[in-house]
Image 1 (tube, rainbow over the protein chains, first blue to last red):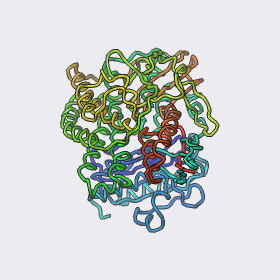
Image 2 (cartoon, rainbow over the protein chains, first blue to last red; image 1 turned 30 degrees about the vertical axis):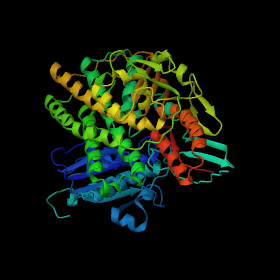
Image 3 (cartoon, chains in turn yellow, purple; image 1 turned 90 degrees about the vertical axis):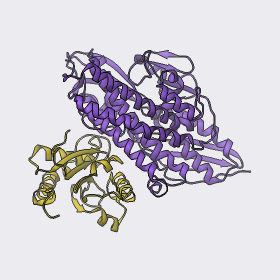
Image 4 (cartoon, each protein chain N blue to C red; image 1 turned 135 degrees about the vertical axis):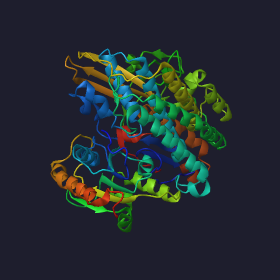
Length: 167
Length: 429
């Protein structure tokens, strides 16, 4: 329920989703897991809730951002895919890929229209099993969580979060 | 003879999804309604069995836009149930926090969801090319409102520092001074906002209804007070069910409400009509520029009433911060809670209107019963009555214009279907 790394916020890990809607809560849950561990200097992990245009302000001034969101990928529940907004656009619209990237896509489109500098963005889309009203992740999502968190931590340790390292 | 056969499966720029069904054959309106497919009643299931201190954090997740509103209403219900007294400082901070959310939500609605209709563009994004300064102003104001919320309750989207008994965090004097300066500097943007919306050609349509809101003796009410209606009724908040009288309609699983007439309206326009005298003088000046004086019976002007409230919330935020600075802010813990059995109803004016939370706790402080009535549900019957009244007046216009006007009417209500429901499509049969 809080953010860390206030002084050096070059890199953002943003979890999107609503924990009251089953697997939709995977984004906030990943952020909670990251906050329980030691994350590299210069990384801020934020539970962004259901997003919207406020994402613009969250992304402002960052060099890099990792966004975690439930995404309809046509895969088995718990499977996740790492992609960039540009890659996602090649296949289909962002809005249909992930549950809150409609807000993200709008925010990014607005930022581009305004000529704002955007951070380098990586999206982790995770296939949900159920997204109806109800708390808690499905067993498949729970089972996938450790690997997802490890992969994101690995990405952060390997320089994605370090503002001085080459991207 | 007019036959309308428009088929729109998605109304953009509303917070959620629903259906408008309009069926006109040979100039006769056969069918004309706004319907909502509601998600299963989930509210009680989330909070029943949970301890009192968890509940406001859970309900703040119901809506990403009204998280402060749900959280504030929820804590008020619990504080009443458990007889918790707030400090004066906590009261000021609660009001300041809610002003931040009112500002944030109204700015989003007026600029990003409503204004594009008047500029003839599908969203706020193409506006950047033609009206860049408008978009930049909207984003500046929105950021300020978000920062105001974050300063008070930790984060905007989920106010983690807002708890039963007050706050777990107090803004510093320096933060308050800086925020005061920023709010004062934003007056220029707010004036430009009023000028912009005063210049828009609002659709002409009048239909008087019953306007329901909170009222307080001491100020323009956002938290607590009594429930009043423009038909002259006054109720204690605890008697909210005498106002809402929820009932089911055949074509919608969402519960509708009615009081003295077939429907009533809640939201910025209802507050404006009922409590105009208590608006800040600058907000009254804004209303004059917008050509508004109570009773305003054009529902399209709900957005204009939101603009008036933006001015009020900005000015009252400055006043509250000055009061906090004069009193001297001090770090204080939330008021202590003595766990016991109890029942309480919280009511707040959130961006879209009056919101009720009602809890019953057992002797261990565990919630055993809960009820929540959101503004959007209270407006459904009224929106339907407006659609039924508007359609016959505009039947002779081109189909696309009819469609746009009905979409604009739905948007004027700023419906947040995602709160209670999850699917909205607009459909003209």
